[in-house]
Image (cartoon, rainbow over all chains, first blue to last red):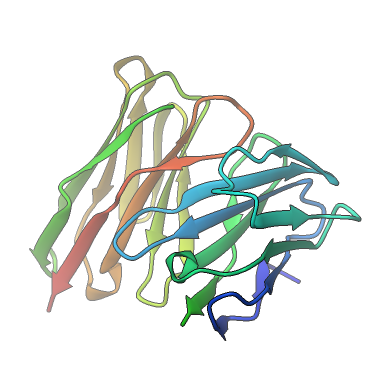
Length: 112
Length: 109
């Protein structure tokens, strides 16, 4: 596709449930990033992939959060035992290494 | 980690007016981007500008890396310019970015 796509666009879940958020980067982009944005704030870095490996996962808030990119393209962000504080917009971006990032439309996660 | 401060936090303009948005950062950076987040939440790339000056239509940006700031200029503002403008910097060349809290721009007709 022409840009970064994310699915689903909206996800409503109950506290304690498991969720998966998907990101399809721009074709050929080797770097992929996950960010989280709360209302009224700028996006906050979560994790960065270069190819298939997580190059920097220092932004993941705790071990309930995990992300994979098994074939170096599509990535999935996984959240276990969701909490109400996990509610936010989860943004994915991709880039060629060291260049400008292009963002997807985001997934709005609501934990009831 | 690196700190990013944007000013002003809020700005209200009449259509046709000009404005300057500022981004200060606390350390040397390898990358700097300006984004516009539209009312639907989409982050739209405006400039990739770790140093120097760039122009794109009514918008221009200048980054003075040695003094650790960047400016975004909007001329002849239009109602469609409304939204939140973010500055994002990377000090490691790894690409992960630290965002400021944004400037919320409202352009009134």
